[in-house]
Structures are given as structure tokens and as C-alpha cells.
Image 1 (cartoon, one colour):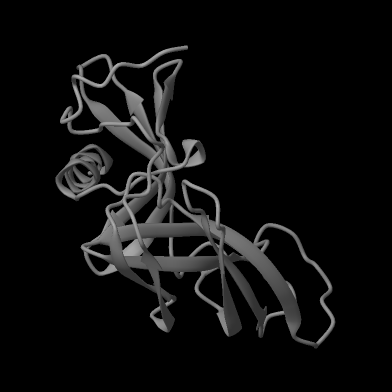
Image 2 (cartoon, helix red, strand yellow):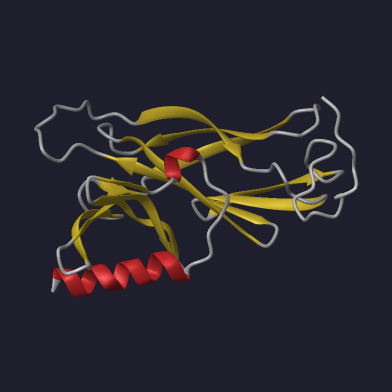
Length: 197
């Protein structure tokens, strides 16, 4: 059963479009174990996290472990009060979102922050985590937080881009020019540019 379920999740991983990723989002394979930090499904960014497969003697994959949003202390409890957009003036432009809010659960902390780019819209999900294996005494108060996250905008074309966080807190920003260093040619259109060092 777990082996069949493993193939289902592997299918989801490889069939979904990928978004620009930070190195911490990169799957790793070591000692026969494949670790995948985040798996999106069409209706939920980061639905599965900390997914681990083992390569078997039968040349297949067996699912060993994963966390699912809504279980094992992983949830979407962040209540967001404000989002401040920070845009640098340097080229290439950097876009940062400074997010302030709170958790209604005082034992919650910020977990993974996942994103995907669909067309010209960034969808961002801030997950909360809560320790489930120990008994922790938490004061009956809300837990405020502030977190600044970078959006992966390097290499994007000039245009207007939108973002949403946890399904709300919408905003937009504009890139006035293609966001790359002079001389970068991702599509090989500037093959004849002479580079000097």
C-alpha cells in the first residue's frame, strides 16, 4: 500500500509545474534516501512537506515519511495584519515582503514558507508549526511575528506582477525592465555579445 502511495506522490511531484526555488527547496538524494522539502498540489501550495522516499532493492521507491498540512502540528494559522512591499532601486531589482501578524495559538511558530508563480501572480503560503511530541506550557495569549521574505524575481520580464499570501493580502509591483544583469541571455538571443573580464 505504501509503495503504491509512493508512486502516486512521485507522479504528483513530476507532473506539477515547478516554480523558481531557493536551495532549501531542492530535493536531495543521499544514502538511498530521496528527501523532498515541499510538494504542491493544484489546490494547495506546500500540501506535503518533509517527504522521504527510499530506493528499494526492486528498483522502486517506498514512501517512508511525510507531513501534510492540517496534521502533525502543521497548519495555516497565521493571521496577517499587514504586508509591506520593499523594492530595491539597484539592478537587478529585489522584491521583499515584510509580513506582520500573529498566531492565535501561542505555541505556534512560522514553519515553511512556500510559493509558486502562476503567470504573473505569486501565490505565497505561510505555514505554522506546533510541537506535537512534547507537552509545552503556552501562555493563553496571541503570538505576534514579523517575517521578511524575498520573492524570486531575478530573470523575470518587465511587467506588473501580483502576489497573495495565504489566499488574501493581495498586492502588486512593477518591474520597469527585464530583471537581469546586463549581458545575461537566458534564451540565447544575445549569442554575439562579447564579454570581457
